[in-house]
Image 1 (tube, rainbow, N blue to C red):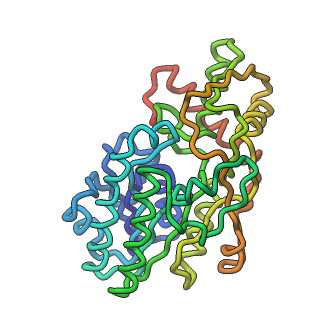
Image 2 (image 1 turned 90 degrees about the vertical axis):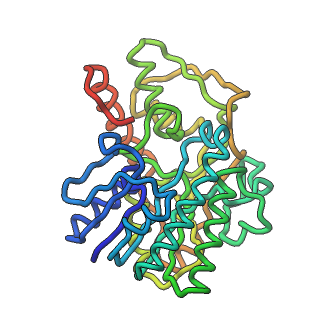
Length: 328
């Protein structure tokens, strides 16, 4: 099988490329970043530096591919999303042109990585939030910028399936974390940011950390291995409507930091910044439908996943301190 992975220089895309390469598939990877900025650079793949906002780039990259994965977009943690709404929405060009190219090149299957940010803010105003079902996306009022782009792109995928017979699969990711992802520079998400901040505090001998909000915001966090397993199972299924892909374990940001403190063996003073970007008050994944459709749900324990993530980030941090160039 020949597989194309858009955004393959990124976190999830890099892991997904490795999965397909290990199976013996022919893999084409494309990303807008220079190759030395990719989190994983697989020499046994065809690696392309392309701007996938451009139709011709999508057409060239997906030529002859049986399966097209669209994981390419402008995104990051809450600070980036809230301050770069137009930039996030420009990602609609990527999905538009990649759908067109996949259809023209006769791809057998098309995967789109959506987000839990498609869910309405009015359903996420409490910390003890009811878990979000797929049907809760409508009436629509998604996160401004990034969420609207994801929801619009979901609809475009659905209409390409209805009008042109393209075999589409869509997952709404809920907070994916793990090694080989963004951990510094402003685009990192809460799990990686907390690990890095903890490492910085220990290194500086300063045992206090700034936290965005009051720490009582709630989320669910899914380890990268579960994300890859879910994608694999969805692609092998007949289900084409959007599905949640996330852990159903709801934790506060304070509890997440508590896990990092246990791993590091250090207790920190918490300085709460109530003016910093916080996102919705609470968000959790209802996994009723994914269990019905795939007979499975994400299962990696948060403590176990965070321990692997912490030690990987600590290794990157120490390598950077020695002057070695590392990908952030």
